[in-house]
Length: 279
Image (cartoon, rainbow, N blue to C red):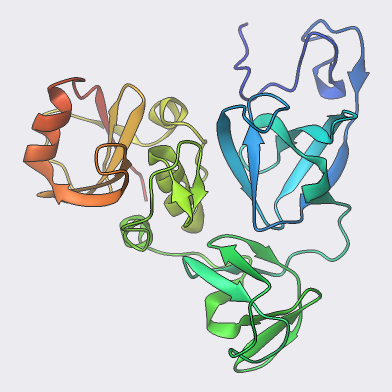
């Protein structure tokens, strides 16, 4: 069986121990658990700073490290969606305190103290995982600083409307491989919205097309929350007349009338499938 290299921790020189007997490799590695220590960390196709950005990992997310090189790169697999790639080793740390909360605002600041007049230490993205030590009505205290209380929710909290979550990112710049409010691609937007609602969602649009929902006729009618797929692209239907997507035409997350958008995209790539989420 052909394995998707994006989701398979196997190289010509080593593979994950869990793949022993399934893939051939000169050695197998158990791997060790680490968590992301910076707000947004690149996951690249190769261990170079100029290599293509395949996806991103957010603060507090878990990864398994299978290899580290002398140049400061770790070869990892993300726990949440199984994506495999290279990230800077210095941006990972040994887990200490378990995450208790997550950021629910598109972006929020980490302050050195419980005072909004203090210069922020960092900008934390939607979905970043936080280990809260204690908190009050105004601020939550973390080991590294303070976060505005209303910008975080318990880790098990679930949003209820995929489309509403996606609309929070309107105007966010388009970034190939991005999955934060600093930059998103089309499938990153969909994954972010679905995961916030407690729904499993793979990373890339072709994976999403195979894994999500039930088929809908290509001539519709479409309803809120439907997913439309083209080769290399995915969009959300906001309502029967409106499309919502991160796209390279506008170079941002944009809302546009459905019919003109379908016609514009069809000029170069026909609509391939439509899927309806079973929410």
